[in-house]
Length: 342
Ligand code: KG4
Ligand code: ZN
Image (cartoon, rainbow, N blue to C red; front, side, top):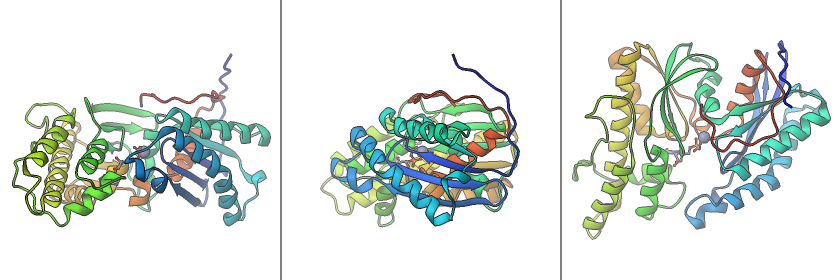
């Protein structure tokens, strides 16, 4: 039986964060007084590239291979011994079950040996709180646009653990739409940065791409129609010069417009003065520029994590674990949660 114990851990604390939910092995050390001490990331891009997407079994095996060495390197470079750790936080979900289990088992094994608390972290909560690692962090409440390979959500955040989902995708996530478009256009994996790079040489506006679900009220998204429109348009115009770049540009513009329109609506609906943008697609320069402009015009403050903390990383997990440790802490179950609502 799971025994929940209420404890309050006061600073100072040194927390190790472990992220293994998909195709990046991330580790970080967060010090409650000094802030982020260090973080390291091993990307599996080269491993999956020839398959055009993430192969779950290869991802888990690579986490097993890389995680122990990455933790040792992190501690050595930070001049910290294993015994100095006060707690460990790890991504318990959502994500690929085999990949998650590597982080779950490693964190629990280390914590058992060191006799320190272990905290499970929701991957999207980590993304949502990542802007707090920046020098000018947002204050609660704020609207968060969470855009990754598996999620597209607008969330009204009124405090730690107080998340009201205002809208989410009914089918594909926006990052998934970027990835599928990249595959269609032969741009490879990972798709988002590849589409963005191709789009720089393209001209948008020739094909009348849709802005899905923006004419209906509400804050939900749908990106599968945009994906189909992209495919049909490409097949029809495949022989035209510069077609890959032009389609990439128009796809990107349409996806970004759709996100911006929904953000504007969420800001009006909540009356919020702050918008946080996080998750892998938050690294997209066009999205960042458009939302920054929108913020200037509408007098909202827009907060982005630095691009390396938009995509998966251990820093957001160590930081979120530390925040969670300050309130209620229980024995985290030794369990991966591939599907886990925010
Ligand atoms: O948050 P993340 O690293 O992993 C998940 O939790 O899914 O997000 C990965 C997603 C992928 O779909 C990737 O193509 C997309 O973020 N992405 C981008 C960019 N960088 C990463 N999408 C558009 N533009 C980018 N620059
Ligand atoms: Zn992520």
